[in-house]
Amino acid sequence: MPSPDTANSHFGVPVVDFAKWHTSSACSEKQKIASQLADACKTVGFVYIINHLLPPEKVAEAFAWSKKLFELTQGQKMLAPHPPGHVVHRGYSWPGLEKVSNSMGDEADTAELVKELRQVYPKNQTKSRQEKKTGAPFPDTHRQESYEIGSDHYPEQPNIWLPNDILPGFRAFMTSFYWESWTNAKMILQAIAMGLGLDDEDYFLHHHSGHENQLRLLHYPAVPAANIEQEATRMGAHSDWGSITMLFQDDCGGLEVMIPSVPPPSGFPLDPSIRESAI
Image 1 (spheres, helix red, strand yellow):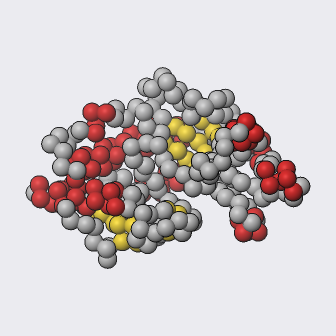
Image 2 (cartoon, one colour; image 1 turned 60 degrees about the vertical axis):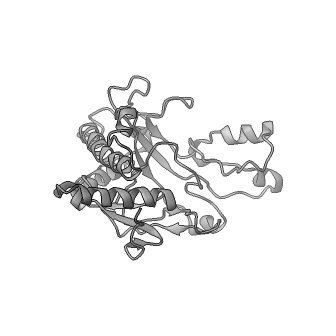
Image 3 (cartoon, helix red, strand yellow; image 1 turned 120 degrees about the vertical axis):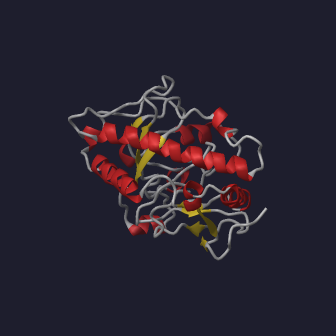
């Protein structure tokens, strides 16, 4: 199976071009793309996909809507709050609601640790074991806010929309973007199946209806640089739990990935200049 061209990569992350997936009728062209994608997933775990089905203009419009959303007042955003508990992930999550644990299993799951990991701190009033032990304030961690959207036909995860008069057009656009993203995801799942040598190109589609997906808008409010230097994190190291994650970056960048060939704790920043890419 051919490996992705090492010259056609950024920071060790392969770039796979899907242009001929749509335009070529030759099975060999699709097989080449599929093999590159599957090999990248197996050897690196991350990949830039360019010339996919979502045009740059559509992605830019999604970022523009996201910006409008997070520029609303806190009171306006709280008109669509994330519901209590860990079952339903929809609506607006304010800074401090969600945390990612960096525990690697080297600590006993004491009652104190479990309580701390589950603690929700309103308005970023975070405390850590370091602060409790030393009395020194710990910089803000997990300074992020998000808005989760899904299918309107998935009762297990009902959407929580803002009132239309708060942000007219937001719901209509995001609903459309959700399903266009799913069309793109189907193409990727088909390519992975072909790249793995499965007889049925739609193998993974038999297990994904499109209704269980999540469209997540993320915003990281500004924090003092000194806080970052004191080991504050925006979003700690983690693994996503879905089959695949498509991620679009703006020109701020900031995301880092861990790849098998580089021992921790080193990571590679993803190049934000590839604006039309999905990961």
